[in-house]
Each structure stands twice: as structure tokens, then as C-alpha cells.
Length: 36
Image 1 (spheres, rainbow, N blue to C red):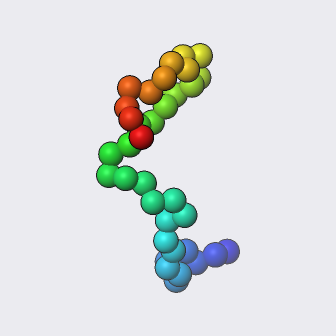
Image 2: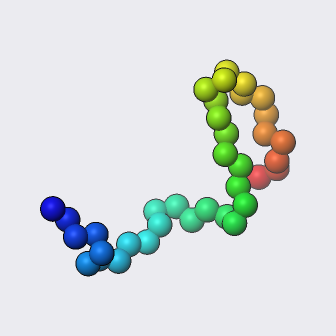
Image 3: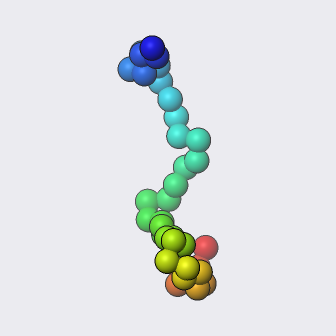
């Protein structure tokens, strides 16, 4: 078993402090309200 606490990891992707989470399961793929 891997001892995760014995190692240091860094995020693969650095996300901004605020970001949009899209849910496409409802079939709504309208354009984002935010500008990237």
C-alpha cells in the first residue's frame, strides 16, 4: 500500500481562485456567462 503522507505532491493544474464548474448532464450546453 502507498503511504501518501510520506510524499509531497503538487497540483497538476493550477486553478484560479474563482472558476466556473459546468454540468452538461442536463443537456444544456449554452455558452458560458463568463469571459476567459
